[in-house]
Length: 271
Image (cartoon, rainbow, N blue to C red):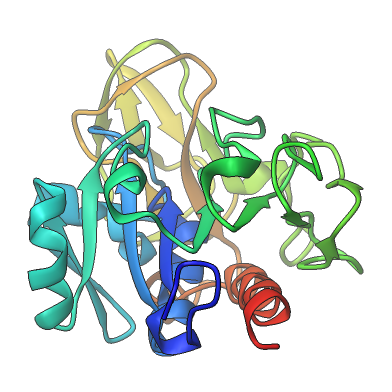
């Protein structure tokens, strides 16, 4: 096996980011028996924390739908973590671990809406999720992340749809679903993920200023207590369908995007 012509089971995949979408991708690739590791920033800002592997940084390990990610402090621990049948997660904002492990595939799943440093030369196959990447320049393949007819489409020439800043609609609600911070400061959580909340109820606060639910539903996600936040930052997500089980399962959007990533990998290596 060579780096240029690996067998599928020997593919090394680096997933940058460990939030909700990155976790969906990592979960699918792990179940497809690819060897992957993930990188994150020291203080992740995931909202849907129950389905985000980045929680392993705080908890040591994080299980999502039967797959476990483990926080490791050095790249030397990655092989041992694979042997333990867990996904290694490393604090490595610049993805310097790729220089040691030399992945066949790099997936930028940071979801920053801009390119934070990923280059097309980082691996034989470089995939970018959503806006901020151009196929053929920054990455080899862009995966569309905008909900709608083209969700998870592989873009081999060009860019994904631009970020609209408008959350996807669920049961007729869009921006109303999102909890946003009223000011800069320290985020204080009053409700837990999975709690049922009512319109007008205080879910969290920042410096004594309340963060109130705008609709009835289940609190599907919220930032960690004690997080330092900026004003108008996304801090939580209410699902008007009210199903608690959805708080602990990967979303349809994340699964679709993960399928697109796996398709891109097969197109490149399964020849």
